[in-house]
Length: 84
Image (cartoon, rainbow, N blue to C red; front, top):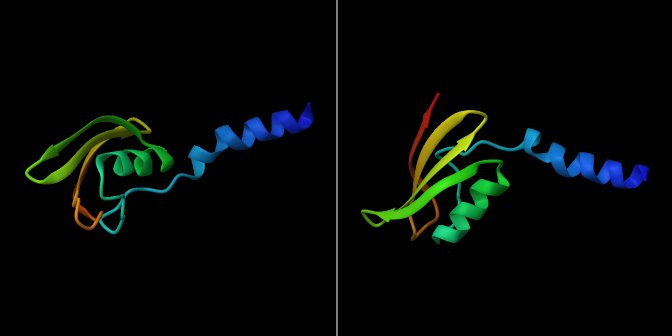
């Protein structure tokens, strides 16, 4: 029973160690890859769409909302806005 509790603690404790998305982040070249990357980083993806040839994703984490634009050619972040 203690092993199950430890596994559960580790699984739910991981978001506390989540990394932040930055202008240096490579998130993926498809909308699905970008959403998966952000989710793995501890963000809740609210909306994803294509805009002006870029992947645009709105996200929330720790009460802060953000918006990221990603190049589908390189997977690199081209624009990042985080609102408090």
